[in-house]
Amino acid sequence: MMLKCLASLAACTLIASISATPALSANPGPAPQGALPLLVGTYTGGQSKGIYLYRFDPRTGHISTTPAQITPAENPSWLTVSADGRFLYAVNENGPGQRDPIGRVSAWRLDKASGRLTFLNSTPSLGDEPTHASLSKDGRTLFVANYSGATDPGGTLAVLPIAPDGRLRPVTQIKTHRASLVNAERQAGPHVHSAVSSPDGRTLFAQDLGADRIYAYRYDPTHPEAPLTAVKEQPWLDLPPGSGPRHLVFGPDGRHAYLTLEMTGAVALLDYADGRLSLRQVLPLAPAGFTGQQGGGGLHLSPDGRFLTVVNRGTDNHLVSFAVSPQDGSLKQVDRRSVEGTQPREFTFSPDGRFVLVANQTSHGVKVFRRDTASGVIGELVQTLPVDAPSALIILK
Image 1 (cartoon, rainbow, N blue to C red):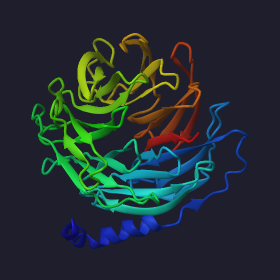
Image 2 (cartoon, one colour; image 1 turned 60 degrees about the horizontal axis):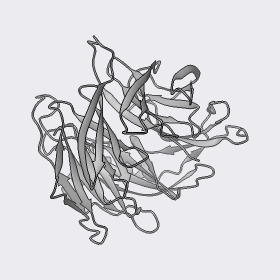
Image 3 (cartoon, rainbow, N blue to C red; image 1 turned 120 degrees about the horizontal axis):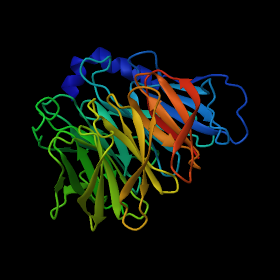
């Protein structure tokens, strides 16, 4: 990595100066009483500058039209907040051919009440195009999914210790996988798309789109330099060939998990027990007879845990909502709602579940929709906020 950085000295100097640039404050006027900070991560190849801070009114569903702060950062496409709300971590989804060709992860001190950020540090992720990050349950470790569109070396899972002051320490461990080769174009190499801890924090599951597998690692914080070891009983879970696993969330009871299969446009129900996952149900996201492009993406449980909503991108561009059975976690579709845009990269619920905010990446806007909390149905459009290439949304509460 040092040789790579020396070979790209100009780019490395550029990103260092951007990361250290003080955040820009705007004058959005007084925020409505009870308004919550909303952080929006973006891709910065166009007009966006980094991370945008807005105000979200949970009573009306409206977002302030002027950002309260703009934090310069290169491609902060995924945002992660520490459990205590004191720090924010962002992947810098950089790679070959970009202004900064080095994948990185950056840290900021976060004022949870106002949402304002103060830069701490940035460090290479030792992989191209880091696309997802999550924190260990103890808050001592950041797990980063280096997606990497290239086949050599392909995507990797990186482990970064976190210092007591919130700063990121350099990568100490890298995990690599084997590609499935089912899809010659998209699965010629491994492509780690996310890494999520089990409810008890003892197991880390890495979703590899290029491998058609979920890899399982035991997490042991007593070995901070190499805390991950493959689970001997079940080192991985095989998924349907060519399905391309992307994102995983656990249900509120901890006995079930839900997974998007990006390449086949589906959502899967997994049973979980004793550190093991097993596949039980796969449901399509597009309607019967759909012949367009699939792109299963982000998924989240509603704040009350009664519904699961999933994005299908490609040429479908819909939010698909399912009722979650309280008995066995199984899914039953209750709604399909157009995102009124293209390539919805991510979405989030308001804290009370009455609104859904969607980051439409290639149509360059955040959409706010009203939602019926009783039925899970997503209704009328409340607002369109112009944002260039939005990719991540976090409401601080």
